[in-house]
Amino acid sequence: MPSVTEQLSAVVEKTERLIELCGALQEENDLLKLENQSLHTALNASKDKTKDVEEKLRVLKVARSFSDTNEKSLDIKQKINEFVREIDKCIVLLKK
Image (spheres, rainbow, N blue to C red):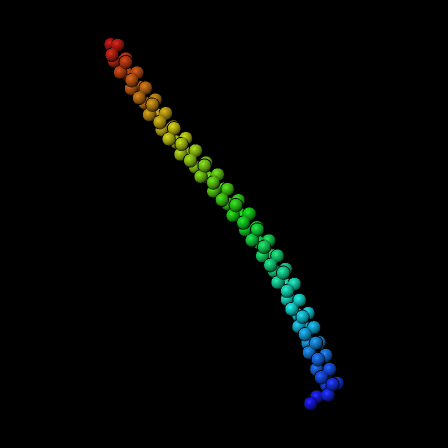
């Protein structure tokens, strides 16, 4: 049976190892907190970029719809002008 001194030495040695382990775990925890914070920052930046791209896409869709409408309006106006010219020609022929 080990003596009290030996038992006390063993307890002190185990306590020192636990303190070292606790310090190492604390350092690892600090590093993980920093990594977590940087990942959150990167995630927020990505979310902001995604929102910007989605807004640009929405604006582009709206602009494209106006562009299509303007082209259609021009086509319709040209057709109406052609019909008016034809009607004018018919009126002139009827007056003769």
